Length: 266
Image (cartoon, rainbow, N blue to C red):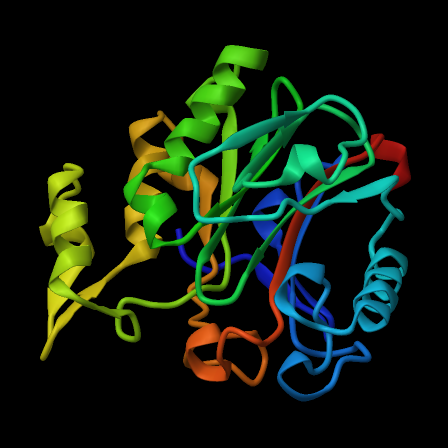
């Protein structure tokens, strides 16, 4: 399901498909409302992309104050385009978040986050077992089926079932804008993806990472009506959302997060 339920304020986009659940909040930040400058203007909340540390820290303070409840901790992994999934059972050290591209927890007030700037953020909520996950799915993570591996981790650790999961696919690069070389196309074909569903030939191949990740959710038993695709292309809407293809690698990142709270706190 595409963005029938999205709402956006100045600082963040919210996912309306989660509104019926009083103990959950999920978001993706915009470029607005912070203190950053240049290609980090203005609301970069990630330390791992070359921004001034004091600006990132200030932006995280602004973000925390803008959420319905201030998190105990923002869990922000140091992503390296792996398919590594980390289960969070306590406040993690930086070393525990190195080379991690998806995080899972049952802990309340822990805001699980991923950083993107064209890659796909996927936010996942098991509404029965009250487990959450945040996934960074670039093309390498997508071809490695990191979304499926994350749900398999939720299943093995907490007993999650696909039919109980609600998932949001956030702002990221669209098929129209994501031109790739033959080697990337071949990697998806060799990994068993339905290329008729996720690829289109223009002058070069273009890939639909939204659909590739949606298909992984379906493979894990997530119901179509329990998915929300933002349908926002970061490359095309780079004035509102960070895009590395537009701004270069030395630029800000969208922070997408999901947090469990006690229902009376939201």
